[in-house]
Length: 422
Image (cartoon, rainbow, N blue to C red):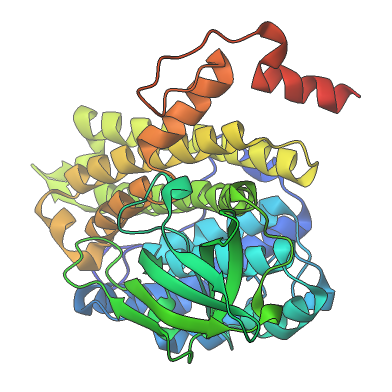
């Protein structure tokens, strides 16, 4: 097919140079192909315009809800599909292929807000929120990051004080919170009177809740991140997440969302490569397609190699998650690897497209900018690197405190292996 601004990224077969398709079930391929068709037909034709205007694509939410991928691994009793983690990851990758901003919406809605309610909420909270959120009839957000506490959530200052008449009063600020300006429910993390961190459900119409969209972003432009202000935000006792006790509860939710973001990097890298390959085969210079030039082929080969390795890692990590054998350090490696490789792939693809590579209609520049946002959220590349470093050395490098030599029997990864063996 001839690659023009109108056809860039559409109707191209999924990249599968090393036969990863053979590792997937029929059901998983069906999910991938269904989401890919939705992206080709509904997302790609409008994504660049929304991104350019920094507007959220509300028109796509009904169709996104009909795909059945929100909360994809959760049980049908909560209005979800009960799919495998690999199928859920494939859905994320395809959505990211169409729009990094829209996949960011999914990470917040499904990977964070719905997961927090599913894993830490009461049965009443699950029944109230999960089915409409799965259909995108209700929207959620996840308020953890603060202006002064990004990579260090343990330093949060938002408080939830007991009110004499019952319930809680929440005061504080959150920043970089996606979806919050139009959310029906916000999962807000705050420090209670006993000093412990807990989670609370704050409905969007609460008079003490305000979310202002952060302006002038150069990445994720059609995903609206916000600054939340909570002033005397009163909520009833039943809006506390009963399973949320301490910082560990928060981190467990982040691990699930971080898994999804690893697939996000794969999806955006794949689209950059697919557009660049098709363009190079059509674009002629010096009387021949630029794909015949050695330096262009070198770039294409590097891209498809890294994508293939990322696909294999993604499928393996998904199977580990399905088996209940996935640990946080592996998830950090997965996110770190796939997003860093996507960053490099987008730059190579932009180079292949030459001057056209900076036009939004050819999609690569949009991905290139959006990947910069993904590179920082759900654990920056540096933080994920240090998580993996701690797993392999037993030494924590997050602070300037003098490290202590690890005792062999205390090594985190060795301990996890022993626990699985038992």
